[in-house]
Image 1 (cartoon, helix red, strand yellow):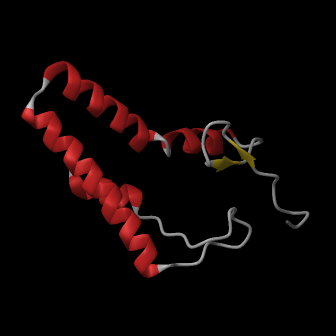
Image 2 (tube, rainbow, N blue to C red; image 1 turned 120 degrees about the vertical axis):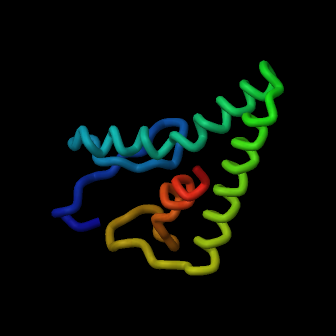
Length: 101
């Protein structure tokens, strides 16, 4: 990494990187974890209530994550310089999630 780029730090339990000197970066890192939190909420609601609407929302979320995974592997857009880990990247998760609802 160059001397002008900030040292990125990882959230302990995840692979989400953020700039520790930027409070907006930390907020964005936590917002990136919303789909995982939704999965836990859906499973809990399915177990507690057994309503078809919750099951359909859960299936929609799973299809959203699957389509996001497939599109990232089909398009294979390179990450911007200085972003870690160096692999392909595409901002699709939020777009596909909004399209689900």
